[in-house]
Image 1 (cartoon, helix red, strand yellow):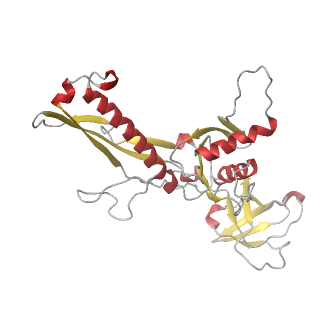
Image 2 (cartoon, one colour):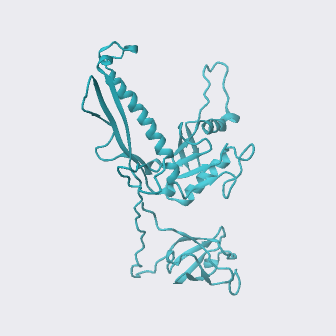
Image 3 (tube, helix red, strand yellow):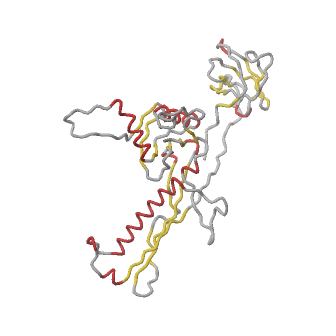
Length: 333
């Protein structure tokens, strides 16, 4: 996982000298994010401050740069780095970088057995099936694809012996388990209460959650993964604006794309998303991948007696890059 260098931090100081409006020494949480020449803005104020020195987590600043309006500094206040201005002909600044962090997930082996008797293979089959072995292989493969989708959404890796063994089963972590930064609950923190009893999904709730993901990452949510009930709720966003002529002959009651200030999102229905949860995903940072050479395949097994048998096998994992580019909205009705 790689991330851009952060351009925000918070004030970590309870008292100011001489006062919060004129203080020029400000303690922050992460002094390494700042450098001399930065211009910073406190909270939502219009004031711009110029950083003239950085010692540990203490910034020395010039207040009201460019005659910008005065404001008061407060503990835990957000500081946004507007940008840095270099001196003409100056040497290069010290390089800034973020360390790439390896995130891992585990592969999960999906398998099922197939076996038919010689008599069944030779007999006429219901439904016009010509080859019972091929029919069973296709049916079991569809079941395995269903299970893979379920695991990609709801799976959890074991807390111990995650690498698996001949006696410990290995499983992947799914979308719900891997999202940790942008876990939102309706009616809590930056997410407003919804409709009805306060937990129904509304446009205000969805827009607020998308905004938080947008602010917390450099990603772009383009996929909403929803269960049936919440898909119907999103469809109802259009109800107050829907008109249908008497001769239309077709009534359309579905939202396939949701476009907000924070991007255009395809709305995808899944049977396996928990009923109270909506996932906001950046599809460019998600991939369901097989272990090399282990995508679903059929392995014939030695035939003993009057029967044919084999095994369908696949080994897959979910790759999630930049975890904070995704989000989950939970507690919905």
